Length: 211
Image 1: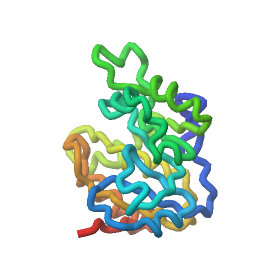
Image 2: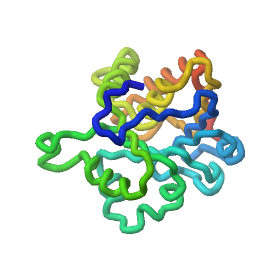
Image 3: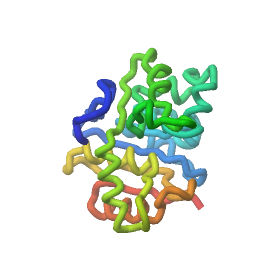
C-alpha cells in the first residue's frame, strides 16, 4: 500500500504477513459463515456489518466506515453510534475516502472525514484513511472493463488496499458476502471481473452467496 497518506492516522494496515484474512461484505444473501469468519486472524467488515453477532460471526479487527455521503451523516447524528456492538468490537477503523479540502466540500457537504475523525479518535484505536493514489489505481484497474470514469465501491477499494499490503506468498484472502450489486453508480460487473482475476491469481477466494 502506498505510504503517502493524507493524515498521520492513516498508517499502513501492517497485518502480520502470515495472518489469515476474512473480508466480509454486506450482501443480504451472505449466508451462514460464522465459524469460518471468526477463525480468521484478521476480519474486515463494512459499515452496518451484515450478520454481525449472528450468522457472520462476532469478530472484527477492522471496520470500514464510508466517510462520504448520507450514511456517515446519519451515523454522526446517532448519539449511541460508538456503542454499536460492531463499533465497540472493532480494533481499528478504515475511512475509504481521503479528506476533501474545505473549499471543495460544498455548498452541500459530502465529505465527513473531519467529523468522523473527531468521533473516532477518542476511542484510541488506529484510523486508516485510504489515499487518493489508491483511488487512482482502482480507477485504472476498472476502466478497461467499464464505460466512463469508474467510481469504485468501498468494498473494492478496501480489498485492493488490503491486497496491496499483503505479501504475494500469503494465503488467499477469503471474501464473503460480495454480491456486486447495489448503488448503480458503481461498476459492479467490472469489479466482479477483477475479483475473478484476483481469485485465479491465488490472491483472494470469493465465497459464493447463499441461494
